[in-house]
Length: 232
Ligand SMILES: Nc1ncnc2c1ncn2[C@@H]1O[C@H](COP(=O)(O)OP(=O)(O)OP(=O)(O)O)[C@@H](O)[C@H]1O
Image 1 (spheres, rainbow, N blue to C red):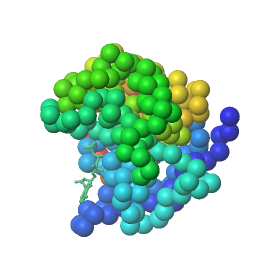
Image 2 (image 1 turned 135 degrees about the vertical axis):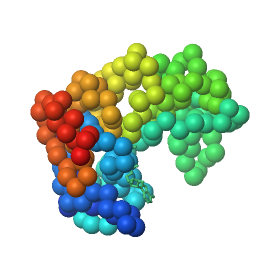
Image 3 (image 1 turned 45 degrees about the vertical axis):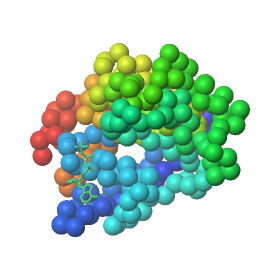
Image 4 (image 1 turned 90 degrees about the vertical axis):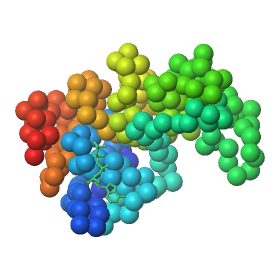
């Protein structure tokens, strides 16, 4: 398995009107690495993720996918978002939503098989035909993860996506992500406030504090450092 750089940030910065969020962020992420992105509320973690997804244009510096953006398939699992109880899709339909390209409005047999495989991997077999609007918060989060994984991403961004889960479900999902990381060299960015989970499941950390960003191996993320970072 290679350990080539997949993503490079050079002097990256985002400023909203009258609100400089972060600046001069330099970071190289290699294939197969698992990073935790931590920092207190409002420090800019989601803003950074949106910049990586090209949903936001940086006001300083640049984001480069290597060797080119065409080789990187990003799966994004958002923070908990509610879905109306009468939303008409089943969990199975929801997972396959992004697979229907412009050619056909329905899934091919191959695409249906992909959806079925991911349903089994994420433990959603019993629930697959239930309307997603009627699923619990944790079940919806599992469906979002399955939707992000169905296109076999090589970069997975989990944006506080385990925050609303019970400890058993959280562990199940992060074990699955770890298995995909080890088997497929999946690169993972895990935005979280859950430091014990970050210490258990990730290899590197990026800690954002107002005016400063620090990074290093997860073994160097001490409780003192987290306390300082959260109280700037
Ligand atoms: N579209 C926007 N326009 C203006 N300001 C924004 C916009 N999006 C985010 N912000 C501001 O940027 C800052 C960073 O927000 P962001 O959501 O990135 O923080 P975060 O670290 O993800 O927080 P949390 O841990 O609470 O999810 C906040 O002050 C927020 O109000």
